[in-house]
Length: 457
Image (cartoon, rainbow, N blue to C red; front, side):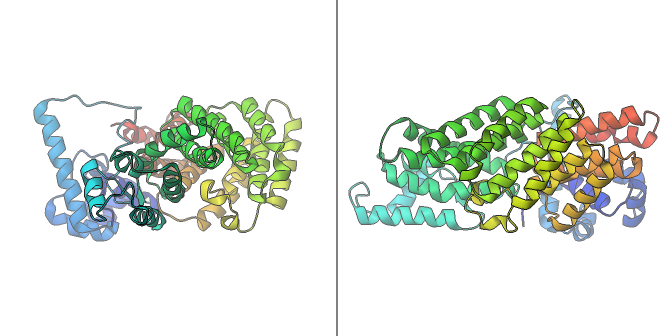
């Protein structure tokens, strides 16, 4: 059980998933509407004797919930007594707080020294003990949901312990774990852990050696992941830099699959920057490698081209036919079991339906887009992970295009709550943009005006 629970966000998600308005949730839970509203917006918190019952309803550990609520009470009291100002949004600097779960193990230099002392002897010259150490570090990387975040930084400080081969071996074990952690929603952990691999691997690539290509492969994968992290915090400049590094190292490695994946990351940055022409260039660059890459990457490139052409259709109608042709190619190419593809562990290209929904939304067919996204919703886990939060944002946008006020407000609340829970500024601000469009479409709706508190810190 993750002890880092957030009562306001849990309450919002419970209410929205059950289709309740605040008044309906209040009736179901036996409280007043004002009480529910004040809890959701963090202005007040339940009494301690109410926590066990609420924990059962929200399906969280009662002790963890009590600790979280008491900590927030203490923080609110500190702010009140210190007289620090309240900051209003639209801003989301509070979203990317350090994740305190235990999916990544970080060693201090003292802990690293103690760890090595367990093996004893002269580690630098005893090959048997060195081999044991490397095996232990690789085993940590193989445990699902656990990675040793900074073995290179702290352990290597002790007598320049590791040789190049050993650094590469540890990196190869841990980088796939960090990719998995990212798609499991541990963004802060991945950002902290990844920083320990980028510089050592990049430095190895810059020096010609027998290890250069292997280092380039790992560096490309690491920079692609860094690109994804930068996107979630809306640092588009850093995201493009990481995508360029990933592409550069993929070329050093002479690996077509990595080059295509890096170009896809670059196209994704252009998607969020709303630059369809540059996005089209990136996918067209990737097309030159299509005969040398796996069906997973081929299909993902076709999907990207389909979505990009659909975005350009409003400027030139001929793009609509191009979009539908590439969509058909994607359906014929994308594998039925993507996880079996050898490139899956650093791409996680498993679902194309979200992009298919975007295509039909771009082509002014929101009803078709909703059907596709609704099916995706049924097949996807309800956990708050990047794919789920992205889907909720897309669904909100489609409902807006369908002029569905009731459902679009419900999904907007869920999108904002989920973005905050994940720690994604990208999805938070996308939700805020949708809210602004809703206000333009329905300027006199009181229920929309009440949602302003969603964007107040």
